[in-house]
Image (cartoon, rainbow, N blue to C red):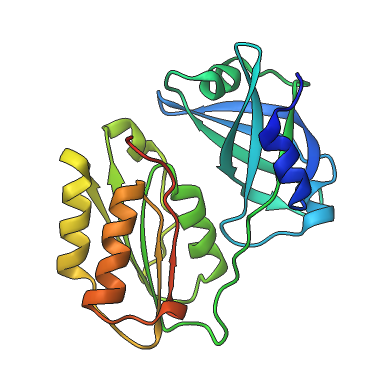
Length: 236
């Protein structure tokens, strides 16, 4: 499959390309599939950080199509990691549903960068959904001793088959997705406090992410350096 102009731009911006190989597959509930892959030297070349994501290239009717996926349990010692796919309509889901041991897929690393603040925050406030849950889990693992409050939006019960890695000092609230994500936005607005020693990480649907981030910055006055936000998907 030939790459398109997006691949050329990513290459010019310092993107690094790797070939991943499927080592194992397993279902996660009825609507998700988890693949174990060999990174083809990706972890050794690029290192690992919490919330790390890569771009995968799929064949979409003969045309290249890229989608971003968060690394799950990356293991630098073996060079392996997992990827989780929602099984809905689309070329990415179709590839994941039929992927078998030995299959390969191209990946590009460009744009992923995150480091927990130093010194460590006294509290983490995390807002996400099924799409960003692997990233949420990577933060809960990386800052396992830090108390955390987590809000997760879900569109259907199948999404709750993906388990948050919460410890006793982590509070997780699942919120059903309402019209335009209003339930998540209202719940977080009503409950989110403003403190100088916390870090706020918001990664949900793009419009909801903007609304919550605006509330943090403009209404609560949270410092820019305390907020990390990224729209993981868009309804439009």
